[in-house]
Length: 76
Image (tube, rainbow, N blue to C red; front, top):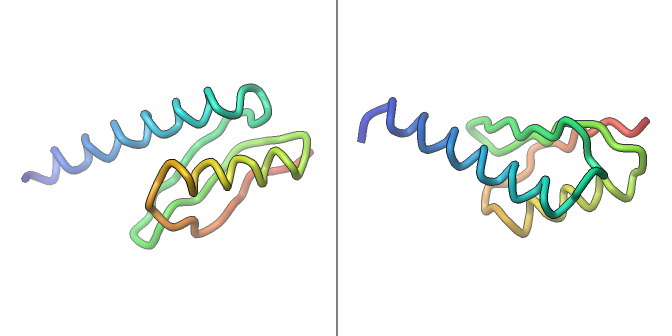
């Protein structure tokens, strides 16, 4: 499998996972992005409540086997 294919597959998986999360979380997390690194994933976005931030983290844990390195969702 080529590097291009691996990158493409990861991009497709990231988009699919972000789409699933957006449907599950609704408008509770804005600008949700998943940043995949070698050792896991970082959650980024904005939320109005800590509960929504925690809900997003648990949703990622349910939908993915990749470990969460950091939850950088900002609560404002």
